[in-house]
Image (cartoon, rainbow, N blue to C red; front, side):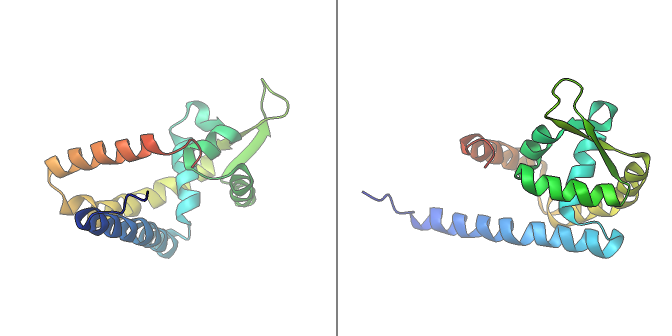
Length: 151
């Protein structure tokens, strides 16, 4: 038997889907207009910048970015062409590869980050109280925990 959404659940679901569709597009637009960096590439650069030696196995990077290994490989190839990321063989697994953020990529990230953070603040956090932020974190963690790995 189908458990249909109640009216409050349906209203909430519609609001959530609107945010899930519009927010990534708005962030991508801002990054592209200001720095020419697509949001997906920015995400890869930002994640690598937080890693030891600014490096991460490609399979782990795909998982963290929520993309497929194939899609990530295409993105990293484009980042390599720009000189922002370099790939090398994994020292512990010859079948694996490691992506490493270059100094040039770090500089691009440093240029893009202030505008991106300002846009995230403008679109999301400027509209929330500290209690809202805490509740949003709790709610999104619950939803993320319910998702299958790699979803």
